[in-house]
Image (cartoon, rainbow, N blue to C red; front, side):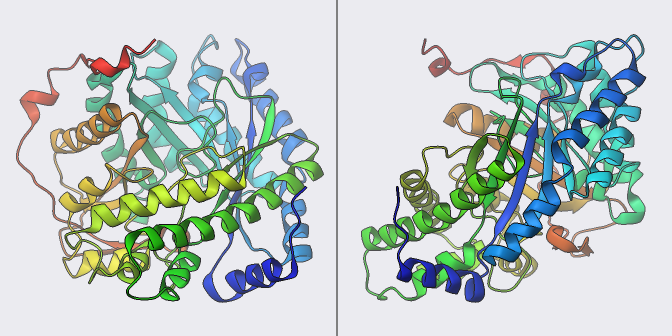
Length: 455
């Protein structure tokens, strides 16, 4: 058993009080495989009953934990089996009705979001997958808490370019149907390569097909804690000392997440799943990944050297976290969402952080092009090509990558869009608008790389 001494407790209190350490989310992963029926009404009834059975105390127990330990838990969430799998056995597809059931159930139990309006189509689509994908824009427009994701590629299967092309139109329609809220529908939709089935973070969370009946997954945060640790380091410290400092603080952050996860799972009487030890920023001052880069010695995020700094940060966080828990999962590393990070927002506004630099950074970070606002009139083929590039980075490097991009209706480069809350705000960023229409319209599947043959 680990012995947590007095100095460790005091340091944790300081991390919470001074440097914005929090538990970003506790996410109940819930299998809905036993909710399948050939009747949509029965499916919806089964889903509602199962969510209430397992999640009725999630929010109250999380609030009790916060009060007892004074550790903030920002979000309480649910992730479910990809709904394309749950709904495709119905005689008549009605994925909108299922989405509304998810939304109503989430509201009834009081969680912030519910993820899993999803499809896994890296190698091709079933009729159920196609129906769900077509339903995404309306589903996100008519619900408040539902989040959606589609896995378009993997290192084993390659890239499904038919689905990539389709998703560009789905993203634009999702933004257009929520035009009155600056396209927020697209902010609840993410395209993946190599998606993990135990990710607790939205909008990409779902309960993987091979997951157990129910489990509690925890997502930790802590950019402010890491920055403060680097600030205390001697300015002449070399790279090894810098990496070691990040490792040590990541160990402490992950230990906190493990404590919360195991205690919460015990209260809910379900197994503990994983700790996703990603450094997830917020729009709050002092809780920024960009500030970590500045503390490392870069003038600003986007400067030459940013990719190298991010690679070190990501690796050190993983090395420190894996020593604190045997159940690290999800995405785990460093997120670089533009709109959700105060420092990234400022760097994008003043032109220090460009779209091309962000894409380069995704080759070494945990996710990908995240919460980036672009002009609403961006052509479908350009969006498809952006998605394809990001899928290729993930496929070749055998890592998870994602695209959560928002073509904001009626907005142009230089405009500012404000969503509020954890979604924050973002400048409309300029992108390369050279046409890729002939290329992306070829369809089919980009074959998996040679290293996929590793059996």
